[in-house]
Amino acid sequence: MTQDFFKALENRRSIYGLAKESPVSDERIQEIVEFAVKYTPSAFNSQSTRVVVLLGDKHDRFWDLTEEQLRAVVPADNFAPTEEKIASFRNGYGTVLFFEDETVVKGLQEQFALYADNFPIWSEQTSGMHQLVVWTALEMEGLGASLQHYNPLVDEAIQKEWDIPSNWKLRAQMPFGKPAMPAGDKEFKPLEERVKIIK
Image (tube, rainbow, N blue to C red):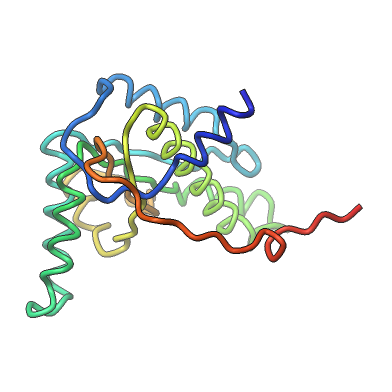
């Protein structure tokens, strides 16, 4: 089991070339996300992470909205690379949107005033753990994914489009689909610079 866990983490890579296909059912994708949301830990058991899964034309619509927002801020003569990148995400099968519920975070700040400054930080850590669990689980099912951050640029647009509560703050977007090309090479810094074992 330990080796399976390590292998899954090793195989989880950023996949940008996606096909609008999935080797597993939509129901299985839902199971993965619901399992992650239920069992991924959070500080003070806050359970502050909120997740939206966009499939089919709703997935396409998200990237259309993102492109619209980007066109408003990126100069037209420099937009081609951005358009190509957005198209690669739209080519995927679906997108997972990760939010943090600010009402939960503020409630904990009020309840535990001594740690008030830490709860926003812990909220980000909670979101990151959920992202890793979902990403790795999708990889284990044969899906490729990457993590994107077009927030807060798209926040207002998606709140209007899908009636997302205003207290849900978007933290990351994860387009996924059947891998259409392998991940690029990855370099690793020496572990001696990153890990200390003190006995």
